[in-house]
Amino acid sequence: MPALVSTVRHWVPPPVTKEALEWADLTCIDIAKAKTPEGRAEQVRLARDATHKQGFFYVINHGLDQAIVDRAVDIGALAFDDVSDNEKLHYQARIKETGEYLGYKLPQYWTIANGVKDKIEHYNIPRDASRREHPTVLRPFLPEVQRIIEFTHREVLNEVQKLLSLGLELPENTLPDLHPFDETNHSFWRFMLYNPRTREEEEKTNNIWMKGHADHMSFTAIWSQPVTALQIKDWDGKWRYVRHVENALVVNVGDTTEYLSGGYYKSAIHRVVKPPADQEGYRRLGLIYFNYMSDHTPIAPLLESPVLQREGITKSISGDPPTQETWRKKRTAAYGVTQLQRAEDGSEYEIVNGVRVTHYN
View: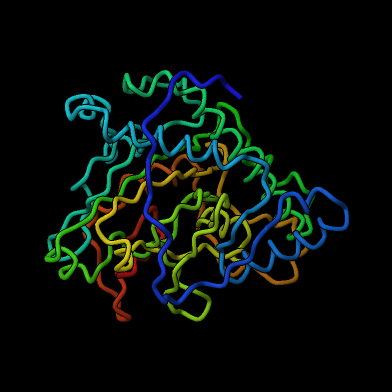
């Protein structure tokens, strides 16, 4: 572990909610059990079935101490509370122009509904944090941030990808090899802060802080945190809350993996809503890692999978499949700023690279 360079002001989250909420019943993937021959077969089945049905699951017993996660949250708070507005502007991401989130996404960038803009701020760090310059206050802590980035990629997501490769009856390194931790990979880390909104803003948006959507990358790993606001559109079409589990990660499958699996693994539709009454008024600070394939890799079904050969291809991108880089940049540039069209079922959609992308309000 990198030496701790200094103490950091501790971020104090609220107590977990005691409200009676409808919770999603999510599978727990146990990394420690997956290390044994007996447990591995069970974890393959659990990962395969959870991803086929919901696209959402917890990862537990991964081996990283909760204190390191808490420290990362404390460091993340510096990016928002200890960086001046001028310095944030200096490091602001040019999202629409470049198709990249790296740097700050400042509040009031995305349109939520009825003229209301978001109150979400995030700071995004590339997989290799040394690839770019960062705000002064964060620089002493970058070795610690780099460690949790690498851990999340290698020890969590690559391990999950092995299980899901086996679930497709492919060699276990099939998906990890498509998601290497090297210079061809543009996965990134995000410190993400949701700020409370006014009563009028909540009424105009029906308490939606971020519209329902599926992530466009392969996998998203969220370190579980206490403010309850994340919901998934469950297998039966109902929205349910994701419960906080101490020192767990909440992992969801994105569109890239759904296309790789020919629709067998489902990309998870999720949204963020106003927290319950006993957590209102608190800021919600999260740690998220977005995982991509190598940029040059085409997003095409893994036709060598016996599972796909039996089940058939139910979802793919028509025509020549885009590379991960093309898909990544076009989806990133369009999100939250494109004029959406209304569908008959009340959802909204846009067309990105010839693909219909749905948003749920």
